[in-house]
Length: 251
Image 1 (cartoon, one colour):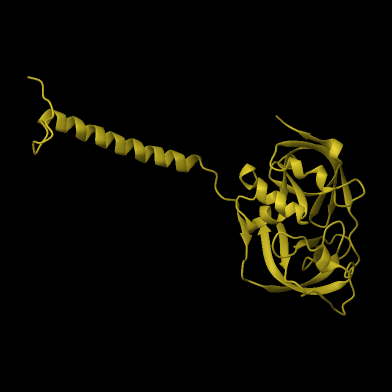
Image 2 (cartoon, one colour):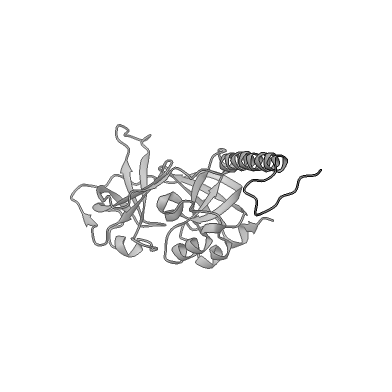
């Protein structure tokens, strides 16, 4: 006689009980395997850091254009072959540091701020009103070297979030935040893997090495793009000189 389940009985028939146990075990194993596979295929967070709450003191030559930067000579290297370390400067919140650095262009300064960094890229969130001029003579500014004209594929990001304030700081999930940061004066950057096979961060400028107009890139954030432009290196910072007409959205 075929077994059937009666709800008011204390136990299910032996055959039905065995079947239920096998189904439950199989579902548990399937859930465990699915969880492992799901975790394995997830992208890990980028090694980006925002040292929130940790304020330090920094000294170097301040450059205001095209974006505020603190230029510091790398220790142990001097002469014509010296390469400077460049710290992008931003204000607190979703604001650029242009108003903070006004009047200090080309001068040796001391400032207080919080480090933001990702790989070899560094940024300082400047404490408001902390910049002061020192008596040290500034080093000669390094001349930008042209690396050539390239056609690169990648994505426009706001440099502050991408370097560590948010993680992830790029992609569609970050689009609205990036739009607000870039609207507030955070330096726009282009992230591409086309230069050396690993992510490279290039600060966007117009063809006169000035910040591009916001309408040139605000509607193109978090989209796959192809940009044709001239790449320049100054110290350890890379710039991409381009124009709105040279930016193409990819399918």
